Image 1 (spheres, rainbow, N blue to C red):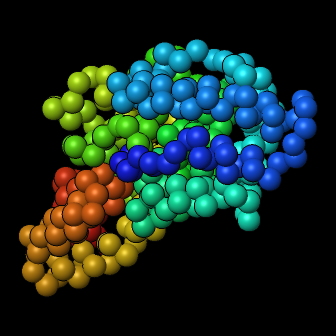
Image 2 (image 1 turned 30 degrees about the horizontal axis):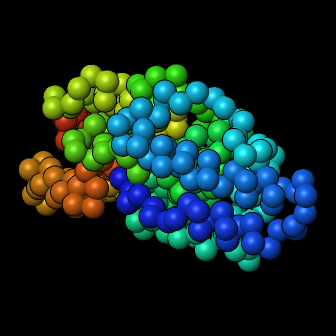
Amino acid sequence: MIKLEKPQFDQDKIIEDCILNMRDGTGSPKERISASKAEICRKSKGYDELAEEGRLSTLTLNTKIAGGATKDDMIKLYDNKFARKGERGRPYYDAIKLLAPFGRCPFCGQRGVQTLDHYLPKAKFPVFAVTPFNLVPSCSDCNHDKLSETFNSYNEETIHPYYDDFTDAVWIKAKLIEEDPVTFEFYVDFPKEWEYIKYERAKNHFEKFNLNDLYKLQACEEFQGCFFRLKRLVEKGGKELAIEHLEESIEEKEHIRLNTWQAAMYDAIIQSDWFWDEYLPNQ
Ligand SMILES: [Zn+2]
């Protein structure tokens, strides 16, 4: 859900760099990849155009690559020449990882970037195994949750951090569960300025990456510290002072990013009469 700048690397140069120190020879992977280079570049350009139009889901599964490079060739190219430390493709890998501001995973917005995710999986779309537009900085958990996923329609597509902008409205919301101990449930709200399909995609993304579970867990701990401060503020200046503090905290979070679980949680606290009238006074 964090929007990233699209990587601007030359696909042709990436392949040249990656195959440079591979073994030559008739029938070698290097020969096949070389012969497929023009096709890979053409497909990479096509990927960018389709993604810009929100039509990646129209791509049909295809492991055949004109020129002769096999799925295995492309997966090994990624693993051994692009992602492996010290290899010639690795500077591209590292540069793409750095596209995520503050090193935050753009899929969950919470954990740190540890790897690159193939937005379209390399086992199903090997032609995009080393295509920068298809390689997104990711945390290990999100990378794992998305494993081998393909999409049948636009509304099934998870958010693509290079092409989709979901930062134009507040859509991550939370509800305070009115029981002791206090917990929170996070959900996707439908912003009125959105079309329904955008809401469906946000929901799909939220579920696919189990974001409610992730945020709930974080919120439990955050709430402990937050509660301590709110209680003190209520003693000092009443509920108004405590709410003012929460509103300022929301502003601070929204200044960095419009959708965070923290802002959603603070807002859920403000909205709960039970919290202010029953829970807090009795603690
Ligand atoms: Zn993540």
